[in-house]
Amino acid sequence: MRIDILTIFPEIFDGPFNHSIIKRAKEKGLAEIHLHNIREYTANKHRRVDDYAYGHGAGMVMTIQPIASLIDTLKSERNYDEIIFLTPDGEVLKQTMSNHLSTLNNLIFLCGHYKGIDQRLREHYITREISIGDYVLTGGELAAAVLADSIVRIIPGVISDETSALSDSFQDGLLSPPVYTRPADYNGWKVPDILLSGNEKAIGNWLIEKSIERTKSRRPDLLDEH
Image (cartoon, rainbow, N blue to C red; front, top):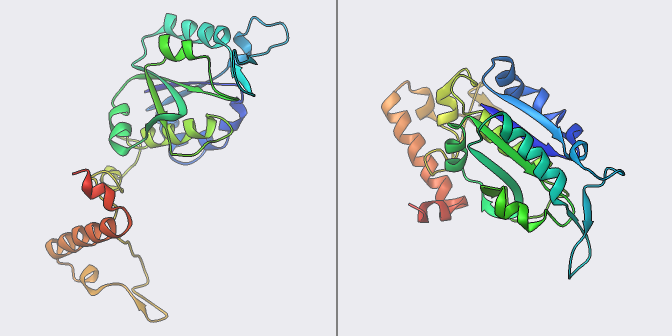
C-alpha cells in the first residue's frame, strides 16, 4: 500500500511514522508513506497557500492552485483509489472503513488548515471525506496520522500475530473484553478462575459474554447498529 500525505507541516509526522507498527510496516515493504509539502507547489512568490474567504467570516482558506497542482502531479504518476480530505464535517471514522481502506493500493490524504480548503477542491478532487471525531483540531495532520495507523496496522503481515488485530475492539461490532496477564494474584487482586482453567470453549464463551457486557455498559449505541 502507498499513502501520499499532502500537508503544510510534514515534520509533524516524524514521530508517528518512525516508530512502532507503521515503522515495522515500512521496513517490511508492506506500506509506503510519502509526505508532500503543499507550499512547494504554490505559484505564489511568497509561498502562500491561503487567502481570505469570499463573502463572509474571519479566517483564511487554503487556495486551489497548490493543492490541485500537487494532486495532478501525483495522479499523473499512478492511479489512486481514494483522495481523502480529513475534515470535522466528514463521515466519522469506523473500523469497517479502516478495514476497507486497508485493502486498497494507493491513497491520498489531504490535511486541511485554517478554515478549510476551497470548496471547489472538495467538489472536483476529493473522493471521500473523513472525520476522526466530533471535535476540531488545529489541522488535519493528527487526524491523518490516526487514519494511517488504523489502516496500516491491519494490512496482512504487519502485525506478527494477525489474530490479535482481529480481536480488537470494533472488529466484530463490540468492545474488547477485559484482559489480564501475570501474576495471577497481585495484592489479592486475582485473575478470574475461568481464564486459568485451560478450558478453551469456556474461556471463549466468557470472553464473548464480557465483551457484550462491556459494550452494553459503555457503548450501547454499537449494539443498536446491529
